[in-house]
Amino acid sequence: MKAHVSALLILVAGLAFNSQLMADETEAKYQQTCFACHGTGVPGAPQKGDKEAWAPRLALGSEALLNSIKKGKGAMPPGGLCGDCSDEQFKALIDYMAK
Image (cartoon, rainbow, N blue to C red; front, top):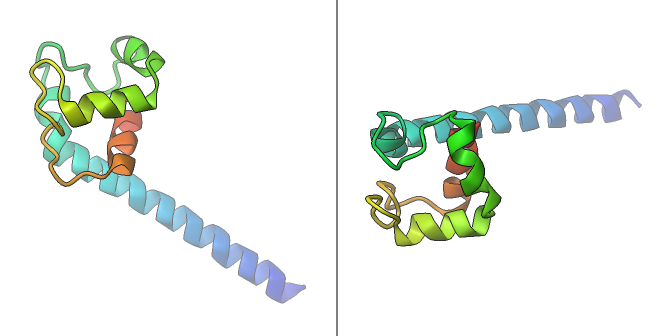
């Protein structure tokens, strides 16, 4: 029984560490790429944390937002400023900025 509890605690600690690592990586990627527009007030770029500005975009669904990022929209070039982001990273960045 103690071995099962220890294994479960190790698993939970590992998941928590991995989750924090992913959050840290998303923050770093945001600072490197998205902040230039989404953190500085560029017109048309919804600002990080502006729930009102993000709401209509989120209502379109994650696939539509991902498509907009990949193709570009308005002044945002294809891929934004992140030429090496995966779909999962783009989705994480959207979630991060929309909160």
